[in-house]
Length: 143
Image (tube, rainbow, N blue to C red):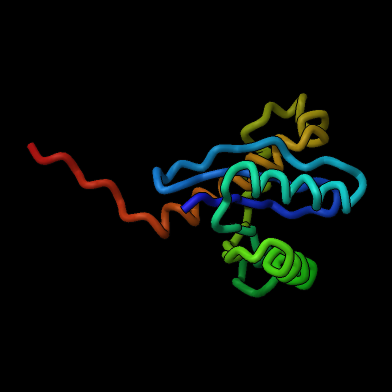
């Protein structure tokens, strides 16, 4: 299993990779202003890295209801599935962008946000949550 974590946005798409080892690692975000260019680059990442599963952050509200961007993410998920023929797993992304942004010093947040680093860190949190749920915990060493 080789997973691509995705934090969808209309301006930036954060990416992360993880596999059976169970550790998510951020990748460079897709920053192209042109949506078609971002889509082409997404396909290149999927092909180059041998991705088998796509893990997409889903915008739930704190009360568990679907967030206002849910329809947009649903359409993006359908397009991913149709274009790449891979399973798309939806994972609650509640507060992942907030947590990712909190990992950056306040005085550099604006420039760091534009770089896509926060988006890819959010994708990493989304993917790590998925991997933690799917992979069995490591066996504790016996004394």
